[in-house]
Length: 303
Image (tube, rainbow, N blue to C red):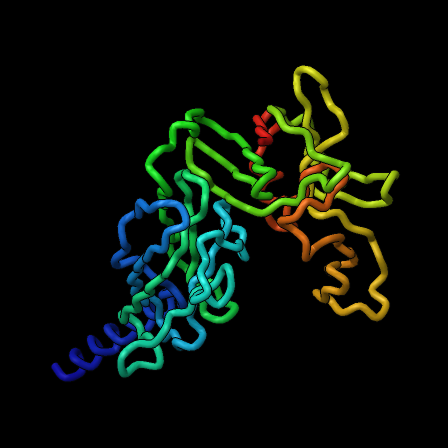
């Protein structure tokens, strides 16, 4: 009988070990999440989130944070709802946990997330993922719908639309009445004013080139309307020159220009101010998200 018990114990140990090997090292599940808030413009608010460690490894608290992501999962989204309590516009620390320096498997952690609403009334979606240092922990995307104000009647069209607010230097990606992305832009500077009106996207070009200004423009989408057709304006990423690295350091910003991957981006530090020759410039990451999301003939309203 003792040999049977030993054999049975060995089988149980082997099965347990195999199950642990199959368990992902870093994984979470959502235990509790605060309801989607309804707030007034420019009003502070609060979101709460409780997550459980269902992986096989502990989470050191000092490395744990939430990161705001674009609606398609692209990282490094700068949230318009961020406050000074966040590390920056896209990261939120976990804070401390009583008598713990790490969250062990089956343990939980609560995030208390202060937010500050934006000026324009709308229904906004904000999305997050959990990070441990540079590791993205496996788990469902964390989402909230934030309603700002009660009067949302101007968002009355289904499908996909783009709104551009010149006074705010902001662009909205709107899908089925929800603002999926609220991001800064740079429109035409004085003497090169971006025209207002209703337009549609004419085409997509991965990288367009302006011979007049000797600049490349990634994620180019030309704009046209019924009355004038195409008049030379478009949506695109911050323009850039192709340059040799020389003494430049990857990721450095000098005189407001960003150097990365052999490209020198113009007016990188001035996004959110009118700086273009009439086109609508969008951030580097945001422009790619927009480019992939908006098909030809997407309605673009510039107001």
